[in-house]
Image (cartoon, rainbow, N blue to C red; front, side, top):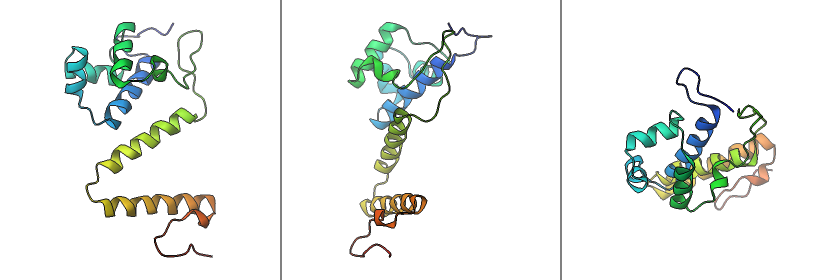
Length: 146
């Protein structure tokens, strides 16, 4: 199993911490509020999210219950070798899902719906340009370029 080296976190701790951070931020929950729900300080939540401290099985179950996700969601798409190291592999669907959630979180923070719409148009235009498919461009009232 992956062991702490010189008090350092393991790859598994870091990966799970990143998943927790994403779940928390997407739901607009503060570290303080999550800490209160789990009976720990916000500093402890910071340590979990950074992978500095390991979450025990009971805390993983409490977290999954709090976020209303299965415990396996914290491990989705993760491959772990015989030594307990997270195996680096190409981007997975789970990675993309987490990025989409992060974009949604950031978009939700924009108070002006008109600005959000323009940002969505910008993302669509970028995706279309990269894909070479300008039929993907969403323009209100204007046909896509030929």
